[in-house]
Amino acid sequence: MSASPLHAKHYSAPTLIDLSARRPTLTPEQLTRSLCPSARFQDVRFRTYRPNPDFPSQAQASAALEAFAARAAQGHAQPGGLRLFRRRQPEGQGIYLDGGFGVGKTHLLASTYHAASGAQGPSQAAPKSASKVAPKTALMSFQDLMYIIGALGMLRAVETFKDHALLLIDEFELDDPGSTHMANTFLAQLMPGGASVVATSNTESGALGQGRFNAADFQRQIQGISSRFLAVGIDGPDYRQRGAVPSEIMSDTAFRAWTGQQDSATLALIDFRELGHLLTEVHPSRFARLLEGVQALSVSELREMRDQNVALRFVHFIDKLYDLGIRAAFSGAALDTLFDESYRHGAYAKKYSRALSRLSEMLQESRANAQQRAD
Image (cartoon, rainbow, N blue to C red; front, side, top):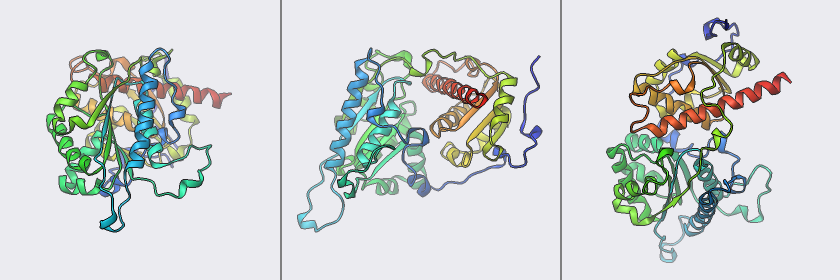
């Protein structure tokens, strides 16, 4: 018989982080100042991408984006100088990186950011030409973009990004016509002024090969600027599931042991029911603020989510937890039972599959970390 579940109220450390007491605030200006690769993708570069040799499109996509980043950086003039002698800014171009999850799209998007902004890898010395002003580049999720436009209004949002050479939008959503229209209007006003764009798809992996993923939908829904975008396909299986067991959750005993190994000053422990309630009160754009100072998170008693609204908030939370590189452990129901069959294979199927993939990877990382500490 397993030990009883571990709850924050049963944990004796006085310095334990209490997520449930947090209600973070975030202004649009604060968000726009932080549009860069998250902790998990800080050190990725094109040279660290490992394409699957069985799927040539992965290497081809990497090469295409590396060349695109170089062109975007070179072709965007810095503001200033006498108007009489200022070159007319070339119009921006776009790439739509089109494929399923687990093939490295976010890795490549972050690598594009680093290449365009001139950021060096952790083991690289800056070149002698590094004193040159780097073009302004921003990396954001589609949800971040929608929050910025909604909070600032279209005119101020366009003004905020008009001097950017490159915008990188992860998980461009085609599910909501209203959001797609806002994104279309936003990009249509920026790209003629010189801003280039890379957007990644949010295609369900089971749709691979069906009409070039979502490329046709993307081109149709951004008609005003579709001629500026080149669709680049990237296929292959989810790399996270090589040898993984998606339904393998931590036992209560293993969960307790892992939690006990963490530094209580940077550990947050929360029950799944309490987490679900918290996520309904905190906007997804504030999840990074919610997790500030957290280096390890223990979530006890996972259970099936019958309400799709709760499930989608949980998916956004897992995405942010994963991107921030926070260590995490979970106990309770098996992963493949979390999302109810009534919505699991519907319009947001790709989101749920990606969340399960990322949960599985985080659990693998936590088990490996626990083993290292034990050794």
